[in-house]
Picture 1 (cartoon, helix red, strand yellow):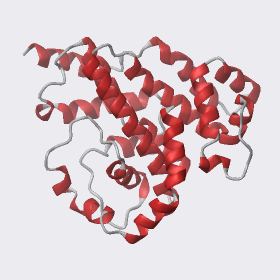
Picture 2 (picture 1 turned 135 degrees about the vertical axis):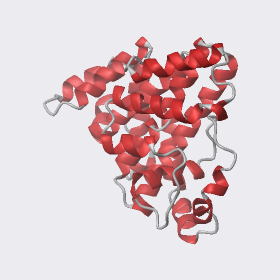
Picture 3 (picture 1 turned 180 degrees about the horizontal axis):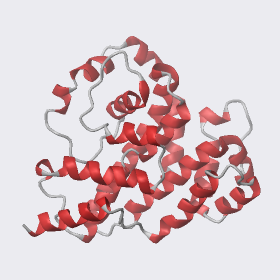
Length: 276
């Protein structure tokens, strides 16, 4: 009964827009706000990135991933990295910093392990979504990368709150669906996620693929299914059976197999940059 009260409090706080964000994400949120300003000056952006060493390092790493490097030289400066990846992908890296900070503040060892697995899953989904968008679904690839980064934001938030309220995630089959949707929606709003991306993410749990795949949600569905590291968050036991069309699409699909083979280096280098 106490656990249900705790969960009810967490959900009611989310419903009122009172999500508990760690103070360490404020700099990344400020950068996101600056990047969304059409009058933002590049020098101001570079100063903000330089003020966050982890973000600076990951931006340089991403700029040297195969998809951005192509035949160019290796970038070694933040200025060069920002110019190469562009503001949209820098916005994505800032969002990644926000999401990852929720896992970094967890004290409980078991929950930290889940958060690390969730981040690995997230990084692989983001990289694969970029590939699937360009080669399969025709969705804007940078949008797919961004959506992959933030699609489990609600899961990270729940894990961070479970660290404060031990046992609150017990027996997820009884309640997690509704709670996760509410919290996911509020996380999307708090992080100022564009509506098209937010809608694709919020409707992802339980979504069914209708071939041929199209749109951002289908892109994420395929990327999540292909990710080599599964999400540690609760998945209904009949998920694979209910989404038989997705299973058929990813199994014995020569076109998809060829795309994944051709893009293996690209996906690997991008996920490695995100995991750095």
